[in-house]
Image (cartoon, rainbow, N blue to C red; front, side, top):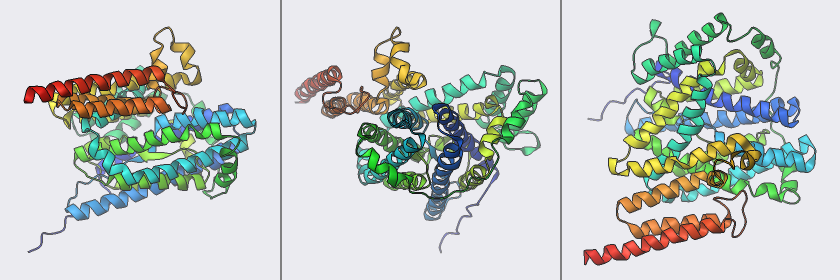
Length: 494
């Protein structure tokens, strides 16, 4: 007799917590995009009328697809506890496109509209490359140790998410610490909130109310919010095609940024899919990379300039017990909120310190998963893989002036931050291999690191031959050392 089919709900209470976490992840990026581009001199007609709607289309398409993908997995495994993959704009990738594509294009052309079209073309090409990378996605996932991949993700979670959002939490300490306490009680200790409200919603209501009552948030926030309201239709355009000619001729230098950041984006998707498998839901990494590439291309067709990825918040949603509803709601809300200018309005009303603690929890869950999903003997590899992102975080925050600002701390910060994802994974992979006494495998990873350094994928601001010669020699030295120990190990086993 066939087993009864398990009911997989379209929406449940836990989806609300996950929705607010994912919504805040994306809304924070959207607000940063708007503020930064306006500061660069891009007109509001491009920022609010083209870039944000294009990004919203990409987010909507990806979230709807991953909700369907979760439904397919739930039916296949007859489970009701499947969580849809979170999807959105990667924060590190966003900063690279802001300051590595948009800003140089604006400076080189002196024309905001032309620079935007160049960035749209770069985004379209990035999506095309990531879709192509999906062909080898499973092979890469199989050969890279889990500790290395999850350790690299944990580095991003510790710096860009948990650390950054803890800073934001404490900008209003009276409010932020209270909201953080609510999050810890509700989401970590899993204690029910009053009136059975979802923890995230309860925290936002309490935090926002208190912020206005004690004067940490002023009424001018409301007047600012209304200035962003309007109608911004989601319409395709030919900006990507018009920018393609410039990108492949006079703006070729900008294109060199696209390949390494696309490889990074593909690896980020792979890492986050791997983290989700460790948490209990197995998705096809190749399919996810192809979908992320397609979502990026579709967003570019509507004027978007930022690649999308399976989001690092996925495991946080799994911990919250979310299903597919939060993904469906996120896609629908983003389409509507962007069309009517509500995203910036909401961001103006709700203080960042109120929603930041939710993202602190997301970062905490990612770090915990990196360790829980691996045997204790691999903990050193996880810890080492986390470290390069300290440098990447510092470098990103100071943008183009990082070299001058941090030189008194260490001259290695900037070069360590360049290609930090590659460095994190490869160092972690070497450490796992050494722990397992697979020294030849460790030597291969060291040789790959040398190759990446030679062409500028690591420790260099741009692609070029012999880009980081000192690092090439350093990694080759590591490879030779590992080969020596592989022979020593072989002799000992005879």
